[in-house]
Image (cartoon, rainbow, N blue to C red):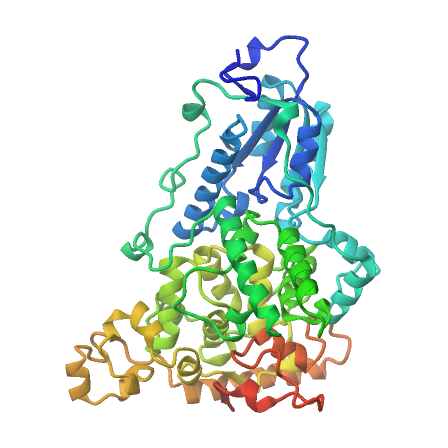
Length: 569
């Protein structure tokens, strides 16, 4: 029985009421790719006609739920609710299940008379066993299984195959292989639901409802997670609205010969503008982002090829990290990871916890870690600051420990990109060029990025009355100044956990020892590394100098500009 007019395909029925003349059903299984636009696997499902069922299965790991804290879980649930709302406008609903997909799917295959299952490729190796098991299930059950690539610009396996069966060990080589493969596909059309029926049972909200974070066993950790300064919200609707604004910002920058203004001149206090979390969950298509910005740039700028701009560079780094993780189940580890240097990091749980909690005694570092925990997002340059502080800069603690913290708190943390960035910044996979001669100073770098101290005062209100002169080094404030600021160092705010000048020199010596041992092993040691020095500079994104790292056309890297705000050892 139809619940609406002839254009509304919602059906209030159950599977045992179907007519024998009805076509068999099709399932589209959402995992990542939580969107309707540019979703080729979804289009494949709709082409079959008949009954169509969109589903999501909570299996304890899907979309990173195994390690996700409150903010990322909330972002995922917001994305699912938005997806359900969008489907309802077309007469359907999202069906949510719990359990192992290999156990859940056979039951609904039978109940809904399913003949086809579609899903977007999850390219990372952590999902391979799950997807292979489902493909075998489909084969054994006589259900057609269709997997489409749209979470990445290219199929990572195609890049690897075109590189002789091995992932390209340098970013430069990756770009060369990608160029040989050709331009990535453009986005596909928006879905047309007119060919399908979307059955919805009368008790849908009881049987297939999207759970709360609490039902998933994820609880608020602090009151600030509920009362965020910056409110990051999930969902395709939010993603598309935000992207529309971002395109306008980027077009304006293109018109004056600039790119990515919030990277070159970071606005740490501004509203949420990053698309990274929406790309991570697939609320925004990476192909839509790439081609929209490329078309806008090509239309406006004629001075510099698109392929050389930092916009495409940031997208390509994402692709590179995904490709490097394929077939490497140990990509998020050190010891068993073939592309990662084995560095003898310290184990110090007490120092690790202070860093995690934002209690290092360095306000710039602590403000970043507080924002991470409270809001689930921190700027690219802020990530560099805290990651180098934990690893090769001050504490000499493994990047793997830092990755676990980011994997819990960052809403945009995914398995490949987050691990890739941590290996990068700790020199664990990029040692040959970086060589660790310099590290981010937790005082000078903070002053450069937060010159008025507004960021520190926002996320460390205990220091809100500390004079700017002492804000980045409050331990140097005289007792009278501390008393007036109502913040006594060592009581209300911790003393520095390490002396940066001494700690950074010790870390430098330790890294040079790693280098000497690596050189002694000979040229046969292969690991992931930068192609050249300029690539290092572009990756680090020193604010205010990106796009101007060459010195007046001489071809030499302007080291002074790069190192401004760094601790020169």
